[in-house]
Image (cartoon, rainbow, N blue to C red; front, side, top):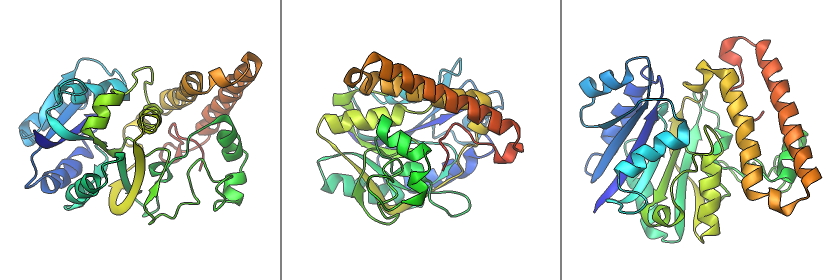
Length: 304
């Protein structure tokens, strides 16, 4: 059995893909690893470019943009997950990331030395050098979301109560158990993935990584933030091309996540209120974006 299957899902990502794959080629050197590059019906020539310039990738062409969860699942299934895995571990990696040469070895070694970990996520650093707060997330319960959107998290970022949404009370360079890492770069124990199953395709974009991490924890595995590895993340390079669609997808995912994991704990009127508030925030975000220049538009994610 080989060490690692890496799934890179692309949608019109040709501009940033070369740096990702060049860094990945150095990171996998000496490892028994295979890269499954899934092209989600790109229209910018990504598939042809990869076949010509990076023939060592196992190219999988999807005939439609079926979403993030579905596209990544194509790669994971090609690697044999969940029923007959051919690799000991699997990684999801966005095409707008760049890995240090020793990233995979360091992460694999930590995972091997801590057999109770199901998911390991590195520190993600944005283009301006700041932390991508999504790389250590709290479970977005209704209470946590209310505290985040109210602005209290900004006022009290070191509070375990108010700062739960992005776990800002956990230091950026502190190894810690978290509720969730982010699908842009997360290493998963193969045996754990075989137990919990693949990404939930009810999520088109956003939320599927939160859902998978929660299922991992409910199965008894730890989810760990591992900042000894720092990965560059040029966030939003694909989603920024369709901001309105991605904003709608983000807030739809919030409702799907609540319906799947929390709705049974609350009354029907409370759940209707949650969905109404999510819709209201979505409409506000759509309107807010129309007044911003394209380069500064919010793309799907919650406000920082």
